[in-house]
Image (tube, rainbow, N blue to C red; front, side, top):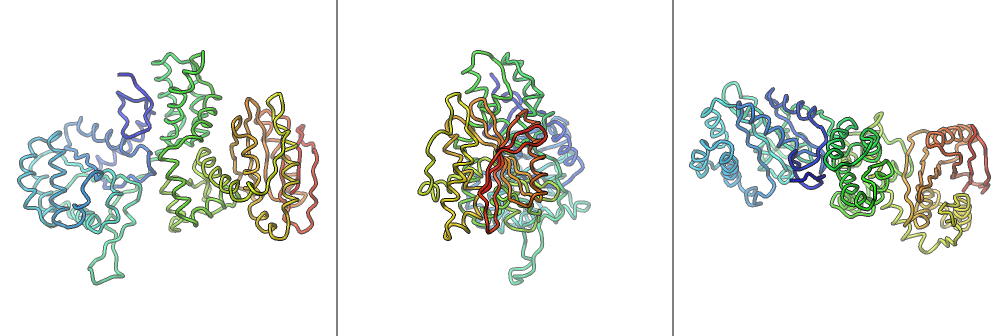
Length: 520
């Protein structure tokens, strides 16, 4: 069977090109061997299910464990409506998996299932089952989100917790691992139905799962090397891995998706069987114009939560240094879905692809609701030699802003100026170019926009006017950035919120670089 890059469901080493996550698996395996109860809560398509299967396989190969690697996905909703149905249904679930990995338990479980009508009886059954074998029994449950808001599931967790606390008196599962989007440690269990305000966590015995599930470049390299050897493709695996990480920050789905695009779409279009850094950038552009469930989830979350929209706007567009607060519901929700990452105790968009998806969503809304009736782009932005006239773009945008800066639009433009520019830029480069946003969390609240147009690259920095000293420092920072990108010219768009706007423009020189500056 020919291997391929997989972006849907479980990954198997025999069928799919996979990053080297052996250290992540080994750490998780050690937690299970130590008898820990824990939750792997990570965003969707982060490799949780693949980790569970790998752990189950390793445990079974030792000969010391019986592993029930189960999932709540596909279980009938009726099971979660009544304690008796849940308890007996869980035993039936165990019997199903025992038929493959512990046949001697199947008949016993099937015989017992009809008798299990409560969590108390289920607790006794678990102890009796563990006493039937000298092997340790491990319970893995995937897709716990299906039932995480269900009181019966919370009571089930409480039963497992009580058995863990009493494990020296009554045998129970050696280890229990739950996997899902949410951290069930935050769920609450009412102590008694009539005590509305008294709650207790059903999973406060859980060990912390601290494994970084993002793929590091060193973990991506072996996957690329195996692929290159199989497909007879030439590449600098280390360079490609670094470029993949640059765009994805190691989000497993995005890494595999970009590789899949290059392998199945871009490589067949080329004469040479090679991968380059430019191929990664090309794949990113293709991906950003693609519909998939991962991106649909991002858009749906923005549509359904004005609070989330405003928070992402503050971080992504305004460049505000928003502090991480784990108990803030909006921040917590965004973290669960992998939108943010915490760096230096501040929120940052997790990766550059998400940054583009989110800002593109916002710019499209701006383009449709404001620019479509206001902007007359004209022409001359695209030159015959397939370069952009960036100076003209900034001047045209300056003229547009000056024209629109009436009393009724002033407040709107002050708040949304940078987003308006991104929306203004979008139709100019669409079809032949792409823009990458590079937010700089600092007092200057910079937003660097790296524009690729055909084989050419441009940098436009957007920032708020903070005075002459900050301006001089900003020019030096931009010159340094241009130097790192091997560019001799850059562009600076300054949003001046003072009452007397100058609407100035012109070229300035700093550290051997030329920068065109426009005030709006």
